[in-house]
Image (cartoon, rainbow, N blue to C red; front, side, top):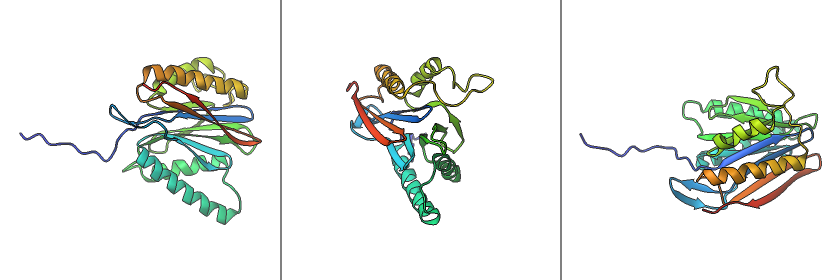
Length: 222
């Protein structure tokens, strides 16, 4: 029997995303490495996209699908702005992202997203997704190749908003903004040691009442 090459429309470009919601802030972070197999395609690729004033999305998986998804969301947000004369709130953007992913469920976007921002009360919010639009509002989340290393660590450090606790607690972390940023840096520093698809540089986006700001930290380059 002749062996044939099995072509796939998908690839996994690796990378890791983390988001943490606080009382009045949200921290969204990802590394900037993009790989395929054992090759690094680029060391400086941002996986984070500002979708609206108070909504930021970080996506891992297949970056071609991520780009296509971002274009659809940008177009839908432009239509919303023309119709309603305002920016979309983060919970509204979360529902739109879910609908957009679910619409493509029979040929999905191979994208694993975390959406972070501020809700209508100014509280931090994080939404975590699978590839076909199932989503949940949580206090913190991680997606991508390093998520299996980072998620248990976050569960251990952030016990109060953990979805594992019953009865459910308030879905924001008790940390201050600077503590959350330090925690994210620690997550990525340790994940980079064990995951070959995570590394090079860490991009951190911080949302609060005064707007959006970015921070960077170098990671291992091997």
